[in-house]
Image (cartoon, rainbow, N blue to C red; front, side):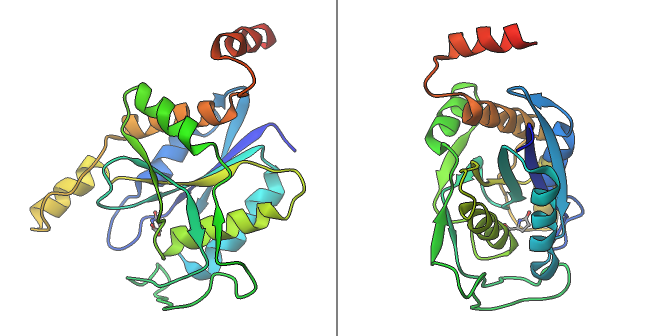
Length: 225
Ligand code: PCA
């Protein structure tokens, strides 16, 4: 395993010109978080090609932790997904105009996989540092859920457990403003800087060894650098 964290974000989709998930991961690209370098992959918002791209990135990097990120319009906080389900039921067409209905992500797979990230610790720490966050129990049935399911299924096959999971994020304020201007009503949003801060805090919390208290961890990290 390499000393890297893999973050993935998605292309814009569904008529939006931007997607906060890819903006977040681009901002964090190359940063050191808890001593590990962040590497990123941009995924197409397409059922057919996104999983291959994710698997190629996993092969290329052999990361120590994986967090896939996607936009969820209407969510008001950083939503850490607990469960990926073996179901695709597309509400809208993807970027390749495919709209599969009532299909399995993997016909041979189990009904669901859980996140292997320490979600409660992550959410508590993100909130403590002033960024709204929660655990979500549905990643939907679109491309994000497919990627989350494929990620968890792939990594569950390795003997060494790599913490991995999915986070949905709100719209950016500019996206919410556009929706309001076109009569779609008031939608929750969050500034990019807040989302980046929350993501960094969550990753640090996930990588903190629970057997050490925070103070001890900080000292040992300082000694290493
Ligand atoms: N959100 C979509 C797919 C890509 C994205 O950013 C979803 O929630 O499925």
